[in-house]
Length: 187
Figure 1 (cartoon, rainbow, N blue to C red):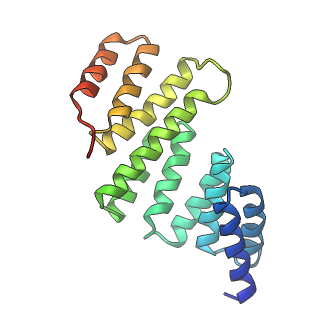
Figure 2 (tube, rainbow, N blue to C red; figure 1 turned 60 degrees about the vertical axis):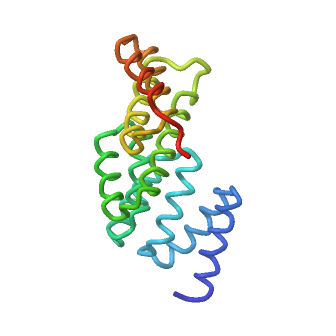
Figure 3 (tube, rainbow, N blue to C red; figure 1 turned 30 degrees about the vertical axis):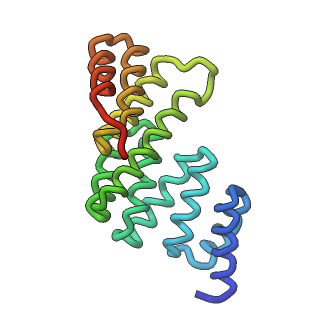
Protein backbone atom coordinates (compact mmCIF):
# COMPACT_ATOMS: atom_id res chain seq x y z
CA UNK A 1 0.00 0.00 0.00
CA UNK A 2 1.34 3.43 -0.90
CA UNK A 3 2.02 6.04 1.74
CA UNK A 4 -0.65 8.27 0.19
CA UNK A 5 -3.25 5.49 0.39
CA UNK A 6 -2.30 4.73 3.98
CA UNK A 7 -2.54 8.42 4.87
CA UNK A 8 -6.00 8.61 3.28
CA UNK A 9 -7.14 5.52 5.19
CA UNK A 10 -5.77 6.95 8.45
CA UNK A 11 -7.55 10.24 7.75
CA UNK A 12 -10.80 8.32 7.37
CA UNK A 13 -10.24 6.48 10.63
CA UNK A 14 -9.47 9.76 12.43
CA UNK A 15 -12.63 11.37 11.05
CA UNK A 16 -14.72 8.33 11.95
CA UNK A 17 -13.37 8.32 15.50
CA UNK A 18 -14.26 12.02 15.74
CA UNK A 19 -17.82 11.20 14.68
CA UNK A 20 -17.55 12.81 11.24
CA UNK A 21 -18.68 9.70 9.39
CA UNK A 22 -19.65 11.48 6.19
CA UNK A 23 -16.10 12.80 5.75
CA UNK A 24 -14.73 9.39 6.76
CA UNK A 25 -16.77 7.77 3.98
CA UNK A 26 -15.14 10.06 1.42
CA UNK A 27 -11.69 8.96 2.59
CA UNK A 28 -12.61 5.27 2.59
CA UNK A 29 -14.13 5.58 -0.88
CA UNK A 30 -10.86 7.09 -2.13
CA UNK A 31 -8.94 4.13 -0.73
CA UNK A 32 -11.40 1.64 -2.20
CA UNK A 33 -11.31 3.33 -5.62
CA UNK A 34 -7.59 2.51 -5.75
CA UNK A 35 -7.76 -0.82 -3.93
CA UNK A 36 -11.26 -2.37 -3.95
CA UNK A 37 -9.98 -5.33 -1.90
CA UNK A 38 -8.72 -3.23 1.00
CA UNK A 39 -10.45 -5.14 3.80
CA UNK A 40 -9.80 -2.58 6.56
CA UNK A 41 -11.27 0.20 4.39
CA UNK A 42 -14.33 -1.94 3.60
CA UNK A 43 -14.84 -2.65 7.29
CA UNK A 44 -14.31 0.99 8.26
CA UNK A 45 -16.68 2.16 5.53
CA UNK A 46 -19.30 -0.29 6.78
CA UNK A 47 -18.81 0.99 10.32
CA UNK A 48 -19.31 4.61 9.25
CA UNK A 49 -22.37 3.73 7.18
CA UNK A 50 -23.84 1.84 10.14
CA UNK A 51 -23.20 4.80 12.45
CA UNK A 52 -25.09 6.97 9.96
CA UNK A 53 -28.08 4.62 10.21
CA UNK A 54 -27.48 3.07 6.80
CA UNK A 55 -27.31 -0.61 7.77
CA UNK A 56 -28.55 -1.78 4.37
CA UNK A 57 -25.55 -0.10 2.69
CA UNK A 58 -23.13 -1.14 5.44
CA UNK A 59 -23.93 -4.86 5.28
CA UNK A 60 -22.34 -5.50 1.84
CA UNK A 61 -19.15 -3.78 3.05
CA UNK A 62 -18.89 -6.19 5.97
CA UNK A 63 -19.81 -9.17 3.79
CA UNK A 64 -17.04 -8.32 1.33
CA UNK A 65 -14.59 -7.74 4.19
CA UNK A 66 -15.50 -11.20 5.52
CA UNK A 67 -14.81 -12.73 2.08
CA UNK A 68 -11.40 -11.06 2.04
CA UNK A 69 -10.55 -11.77 5.70
CA UNK A 70 -12.69 -14.53 7.21
CA UNK A 71 -10.59 -14.50 10.39
CA UNK A 72 -11.87 -11.10 11.62
CA UNK A 73 -14.45 -11.57 14.37
CA UNK A 74 -15.35 -7.87 14.25
CA UNK A 75 -16.53 -8.06 10.64
CA UNK A 76 -18.92 -10.87 11.58
CA UNK A 77 -20.13 -8.95 14.65
CA UNK A 78 -20.69 -5.76 12.65
CA UNK A 79 -22.50 -7.66 9.88
CA UNK A 80 -24.66 -9.28 12.57
CA UNK A 81 -25.60 -5.88 13.99
CA UNK A 82 -26.64 -4.77 10.50
CA UNK A 83 -28.72 -7.91 9.99
CA UNK A 84 -30.40 -7.36 13.34
CA UNK A 85 -31.14 -3.75 12.52
CA UNK A 86 -32.66 -4.96 9.23
CA UNK A 87 -34.88 -7.33 11.27
CA UNK A 88 -33.10 -10.52 10.26
CA UNK A 89 -32.48 -12.06 13.72
CA UNK A 90 -31.70 -15.57 12.43
CA UNK A 91 -28.96 -14.31 10.11
CA UNK A 92 -27.68 -12.06 12.87
CA UNK A 93 -27.51 -14.96 15.29
CA UNK A 94 -25.46 -17.06 12.87
CA UNK A 95 -23.03 -14.21 12.28
CA UNK A 96 -22.68 -13.55 16.01
CA UNK A 97 -21.97 -17.23 16.65
CA UNK A 98 -19.19 -17.16 14.06
CA UNK A 99 -17.75 -14.01 15.66
CA UNK A 100 -17.79 -15.75 19.05
CA UNK A 101 -16.04 -18.78 17.58
CA UNK A 102 -13.29 -16.51 16.28
CA UNK A 103 -13.08 -14.54 19.51
CA UNK A 104 -14.23 -16.78 22.39
CA UNK A 105 -13.31 -14.31 25.13
CA UNK A 106 -16.17 -13.74 27.59
CA UNK A 107 -15.70 -9.98 27.54
CA UNK A 108 -16.09 -9.96 23.73
CA UNK A 109 -19.43 -11.78 23.98
CA UNK A 110 -20.61 -9.50 26.79
CA UNK A 111 -19.56 -6.37 24.89
CA UNK A 112 -21.51 -7.62 21.87
CA UNK A 113 -24.53 -8.16 24.14
CA UNK A 114 -24.32 -4.53 25.26
CA UNK A 115 -24.14 -3.37 21.63
CA UNK A 116 -27.16 -5.51 20.77
CA UNK A 117 -29.06 -4.14 23.77
CA UNK A 118 -28.35 -0.55 22.72
CA UNK A 119 -29.47 -1.37 19.20
CA UNK A 120 -32.75 -2.68 20.65
CA UNK A 121 -33.24 0.54 22.58
CA UNK A 122 -32.52 2.56 19.46
CA UNK A 123 -35.06 0.52 17.49
CA UNK A 124 -37.75 1.50 20.01
CA UNK A 125 -37.09 5.21 19.65
CA UNK A 126 -36.51 5.42 15.90
CA UNK A 127 -39.22 7.06 13.86
CA UNK A 128 -42.50 8.12 15.44
CA UNK A 129 -42.53 9.33 19.01
CA UNK A 130 -44.68 6.44 20.19
CA UNK A 131 -43.33 3.03 19.25
CA UNK A 132 -45.84 0.58 17.83
CA UNK A 133 -46.03 -3.21 18.18
CA UNK A 134 -43.81 -3.77 15.15
CA UNK A 135 -41.03 -1.78 16.81
CA UNK A 136 -41.42 -3.77 20.03
CA UNK A 137 -41.30 -7.06 18.10
CA UNK A 138 -38.17 -5.92 16.29
CA UNK A 139 -36.49 -4.70 19.49
CA UNK A 140 -37.53 -7.88 21.31
CA UNK A 141 -35.26 -9.89 19.01
CA UNK A 142 -32.34 -7.69 19.99
CA UNK A 143 -33.10 -7.95 23.70
CA UNK A 144 -33.43 -11.75 23.47
CA UNK A 145 -30.04 -12.01 21.77
CA UNK A 146 -28.48 -9.64 24.30
CA UNK A 147 -29.74 -11.75 27.19
CA UNK A 148 -28.64 -14.94 25.44
CA UNK A 149 -25.11 -13.61 24.96
CA UNK A 150 -24.90 -12.18 28.49
CA UNK A 151 -27.29 -14.20 30.71
CA UNK A 152 -26.83 -11.93 33.74
CA UNK A 153 -27.70 -8.75 31.81
CA UNK A 154 -30.39 -7.30 34.08
CA UNK A 155 -31.30 -4.43 31.74
CA UNK A 156 -31.92 -6.86 28.87
CA UNK A 157 -34.27 -8.90 31.08
CA UNK A 158 -36.11 -5.72 32.11
CA UNK A 159 -36.33 -4.60 28.48
CA UNK A 160 -37.80 -7.98 27.52
CA UNK A 161 -40.39 -7.67 30.29
CA UNK A 162 -41.36 -4.26 28.93
CA UNK A 163 -41.42 -5.47 25.32
CA UNK A 164 -43.64 -8.43 26.15
CA UNK A 165 -45.92 -6.15 28.14
CA UNK A 166 -46.35 -3.88 25.11
CA UNK A 167 -46.87 -6.93 22.90
CA UNK A 168 -49.75 -8.05 25.13
CA UNK A 169 -48.21 -11.15 26.74
CA UNK A 170 -48.33 -10.65 30.52
CA UNK A 171 -47.10 -14.19 31.19
CA UNK A 172 -43.83 -13.66 29.32
CA UNK A 173 -43.54 -10.15 30.75
CA UNK A 174 -43.83 -11.54 34.30
CA UNK A 175 -41.26 -14.23 33.49
CA UNK A 176 -38.67 -11.59 32.59
CA UNK A 177 -39.64 -9.38 35.54
CA UNK A 178 -38.93 -12.32 37.86
CA UNK A 179 -35.71 -13.14 36.00
CA UNK A 180 -34.49 -9.54 36.33
CA UNK A 181 -35.27 -9.63 40.07
CA UNK A 182 -33.19 -12.82 40.50
CA UNK A 183 -30.19 -11.54 38.60
CA UNK A 184 -27.45 -9.80 40.51
CA UNK A 185 -25.46 -6.89 39.15
CA UNK A 186 -21.94 -7.77 38.05
CA UNK A 187 -19.10 -6.60 40.24
